[in-house]
Length: 329
Ligand SMILES: NCc1[nH]cc(CCC(=O)O)c1CC(=O)O
Image (cartoon, rainbow, N blue to C red; front, side):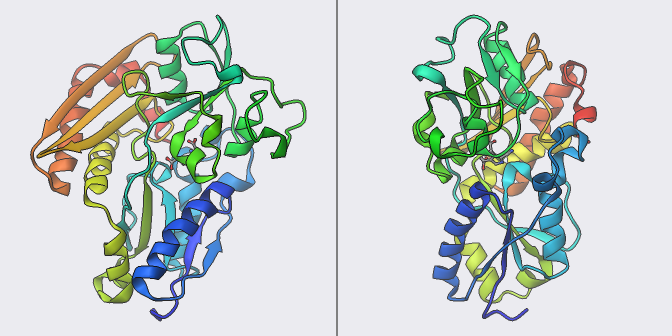
């Protein structure tokens, strides 16, 4: 690979272009190379059916990964939570930059919080994980399956700041009381002012990897060392990598995908790495919550922590609570 130019692949959404632009600036600064950004169309951007019916977990990542493998680009920038845990031969997760806010956020009409939403209020989300945890906290809510980009989702709630400028969806503007979105995504597209409540871990655990980015490249390119490998190593953040390694270790052991009702969040505190996880039944009536820590602050230690906590969940019947295998497809 010519190291003077490093092509950076990304999805074409506003969110993807924004986060890719920011991390690419850092790569250019530390690497001193040209780094043109190349948007790659993915099935997830083209098709509009339910995610679960179009290949689920990996639709956003697969085409980007193919683009790295066939040389259209040299580095792919993914949202880590959209990246399947299954390794792809020839590709390396070369950098996990410092994580943004991992929490989910409630964006409601009239500034309402989760407890203030009226009985039977409608809340939009396409995520079984968010739906199940919302119902666990508020069984009366009416969960509405929505999808589309972040601006399109925000347009479903009347009166949110900035909504007038976003694309209207015919018949589907201002028809919901609230939506739940990742705080990190809202920050990246500068719409954090729509948040009425940040949902803390005791109410809603985020998706494994939420708020973090993943930079993937061809294994051969980093094995050679060189400018690219050094630049990627420079933007890697050790504590973030430990945390997401634990979360993804858990997800992989559960054999669950990003559409499973599984929440997980890990963080380092002093000499310990903590991992907290939840599995819900889809209707939110049954919940298993577990937490565990390790002093093994290596990626191996973090992976083991994830595996051990997953086995605790499985031993406690998490596989029956939620159709984990079914949601991995
Ligand atoms: N599934 C879509 C997706 N993938 C990454 C983000 C942004 C947050 C992140 O990087 O974790 C979002 C939007 C959302 O869930 O609100």
